[in-house]
Amino acid sequence: NAGVTQTPKFQVLKTGQSMTLQCAQDMNHNSMYWYRQDPGMGLRLIYYSASEGTTDKGEVPNGYNVSRLNKREFSLRLESAAPSQTSVYFCASTDAGTTYYEQYFGPGTRLTVT
Amino acid sequence: EDQVTQSPEALRLQEGESSSLNCSYTVSGLRGLFWYRQDPGKGPEFLFTLYSAGEEKEKERLKATLTKKESFLHITAPKPEDSATYLCAVQAGGSYIPTFGRGTSLIVHP
Image (cartoon, rainbow over the protein chains, first blue to last red):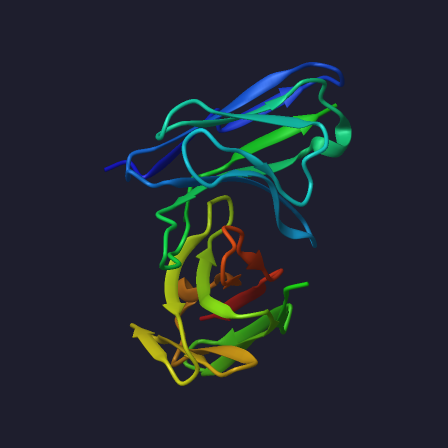
């Protein structure tokens, strides 16, 4: 049971380049999330997917797009990277429903935009 | 707007010196309060869920408690391996989005 996996682990981009961060979970969870974590700012939600086929904006969606490819996979795309997007990105999943459950996080992707 | 405030921001303890971390919250209709541990360079790892005031949960040297306004994470006789950042999050009824605090960075010196 791998839990939540993310690729790549590290990435360096130049301003204006694009890339996609991949996330997959094998826990049959309904909901998936993308966060960024910056020093002093805590975890900030970028986008989430409450269930397969739906996506919604979080607190800081500008400059990002997402795709819920299937129940297992949720990708985050940066179309034109900016230095302000230098951060650590975490994907998380949870079995949301009528009861509120904990989130399970991936190991993170450390992105630097120069 | 849901808010979560964790204190202190940083805490240094000697091995064996017990202490508590605080998570105060304002949320409309609390449905769950979560504690996570995050080691440097890793993703947060789930520790506890608390659903109602008066509830307590324990795991090894950690004990989490919940009131209507705050939660405490008590650390009894900590060891250096307890060093990590501890995150608190709350979830309101009807929302898929938890609200996270900024965390408490704990360092336990041998």
